[in-house]
Length: 269
Image (cartoon, rainbow, N blue to C red; front, side, top):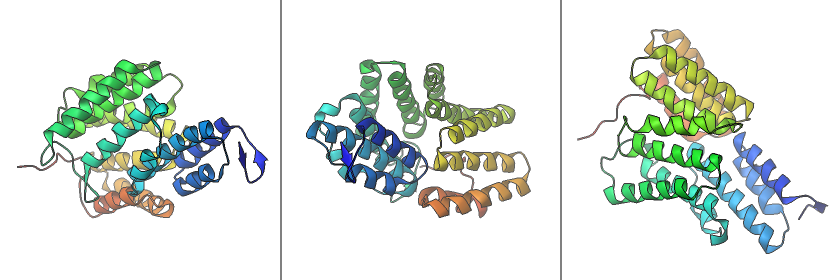
């Protein structure tokens, strides 16, 4: 393939775009992928990478990845189905750009369908890494859409067991296992998992992901009586998240600084 007149391997461009997205440079990553001049088979790989980048931007900045996903062809297989599960999960999790946990006020059929699709991802997985990410999907759905808190940890443990050298998968599993430690009152366990998750995110170059992890540590400071530490850490997360355009994260941190509890049980009728 070529970009700006230079011949570059497609895999290298995709890897570079993913690293840019991890750093919170979603628009720059998309510009790189769109600038490449390729034959149709290579374009399919770039379109898939663009959908992945756009989805990361949606999670942190609230942009919509729907058009990028629609541009991907059916030949993209497991990876595209995984991204579509993530996209539909995001839509169910957010209402009017507000994070809303639990099944309340949501279509039960849509949640059930998403769960079936996540199980199918696990069954169709080609390797441990794909199985691990499918397990994460099942954990997210159990935790955040079904409010089945007792079900989710087993999925996270299964993901962590096969994470291997995928630091982002290990980070994601530890992040959510630490959340359960926190809810169970095991604050030392939560701190250990969240600090390790922070290290893994930083090692993978995941700037907004590392900031969101630091935000959880700020919440832990407050919960254990260190309000000064909570305010100091959250202030820096707010500053950084605003600077990189992670608007959704910034809104949650700003609310935390004003007294909101990001880890409180969701309200429902």
